[in-house]
Length: 76
Image 1 (cartoon, rainbow, N blue to C red):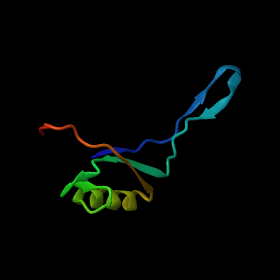
Image 2: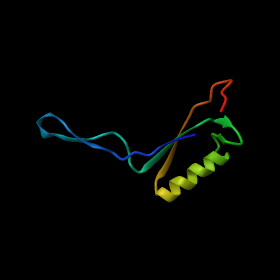
Image 3: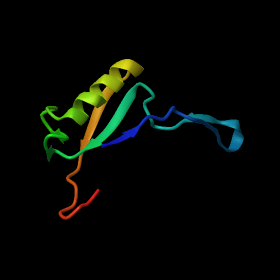
């Protein structure tokens, strides 16, 4: 599971134009395996899913998942 929590950054462009990156600072983005119980699944039943929910709650952010399966033969 990967967490990405970054604030939107303002950047100065040519001509003094101030623009905002397309990152929503109110969303905690999490990447998880959709079929990797007991760690995570796409139904939110894994303990990593529960940790992500708790972290988002504590940070007062919405939780957004991107699911991607771990590669076969992946070792930790």
